[in-house]
Image 1 (cartoon, rainbow, N blue to C red):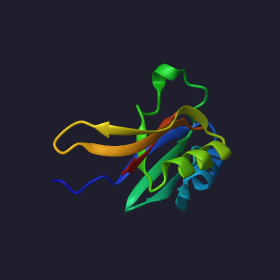
Image 2: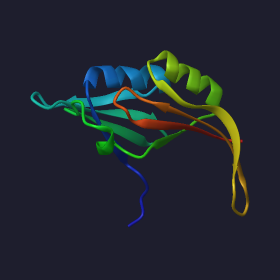
Image 3: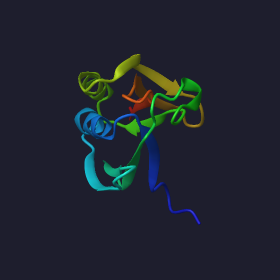
Length: 127
């Protein structure tokens, strides 16, 4: 069965702050919330993709990273990088042009930020 990606999941130190960050930084919209003791939420990332966020990450050390990185498709890497920083992200790699090798080569503009929970977010624009 190959039906594509439904969602990626992230554990958050603070659910409300994390939801607000992804809304402000990248324009995601909240789809649903559930749970009283361990609340969680799903955000619409666009393109039929969902970010699921679970509370309760605490202050887990870096070796328990939530994911290696998630790459968000962008039509303006520089704009979205600035938006992420304004929403509270920490810069990891400023926007830069690259070419991924292969046949055919893939020119892109990328940047990396670290989100509120230590997660690494790549902003990826195909050129």
